[in-house]
Image (cartoon, rainbow, N blue to C red; front, side, top):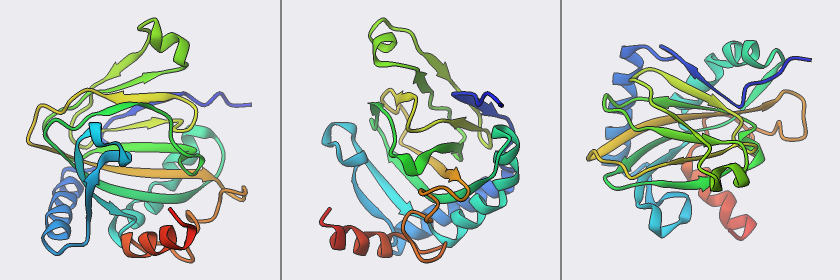
Length: 200
């Protein structure tokens, strides 16, 4: 059985051109009110971000990267959902783990300025100060096991920071539902409708 790394840096995961397109896609999405603006992960103390859930652009990107993720885990994955996010200055992420729809996650750095991401295996080790700080460059990405490992970011020192998150699950598993969507490319409008139906 293949051992899957808890976290792993993927150099040059995205091209410079893709990063430029993503930045412009974010700018247009904000300008045309396609994004949600609010507390990061619903925690007021974390700051604010602009979120674009599973646009056709980011879902297409996520689908194109399936073969690469398959090689990392030596198994077959399906895309769950994607997120294009722009963080505002002073944003931060508290230590947390993700929901199971993020079984295998990839955080892609779009912005030029670095913003370190911290990883730890258990709450006990984090309390003892045992964790890794990963600093990557534009176009690089970090693969990690979102629901299993703790991760965080300290306060953002720049005016903004753009990331694309690609989330995958094992193909054919009970989680393989496109995050409860009938089709890929259904964005935040559909997601908000789903949350209202589910009472969230």
